[in-house]
Image 1 (spheres, rainbow, N blue to C red):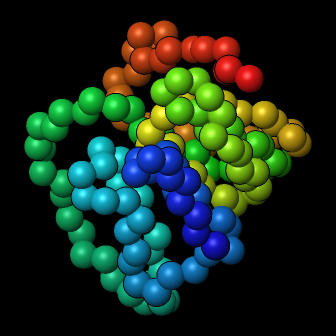
Image 2: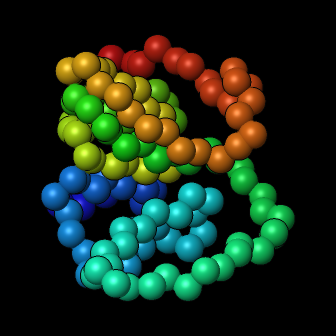
Amino acid sequence: MLKKVEYQGLMYAIIIQSNYRADGIEFFTPPEFSQQLALMSRPRGHIIQPHFHRKIERQVFLTQEVLLVKKGRVRVNFYNSQKEILGSETLEKGDVILLSEGGHGFEVLEDCEMLEVKQGPYLGDQDKVRFDPKS
């Protein structure tokens, strides 16, 4: 299953559950996102031609991150710019999420391992604004 979390015309997240299937290659993100997310399904023997990626200078104004749940379960809470909760989704082993807008927080429901991918260089506390959610 594929789920998009949207609020007031903004894409907060894209969730790809572990059982989602696609034929060929399917991109889930719009071209202007600074993080691109796709699923490739290719048959045995398919060749992806060797290639390089060109060095192209890009400007990134918002860090977007991708998380892969390797083990366990985790609840992701989504927040708007007023720090109000919009809702939550539970991720399980094999699920992938792209966090693209707004705030987010996590509650680990079962011991978990997650793989995270985001733009760098990482600037530590300069990269984040931590907040207490409004009730």
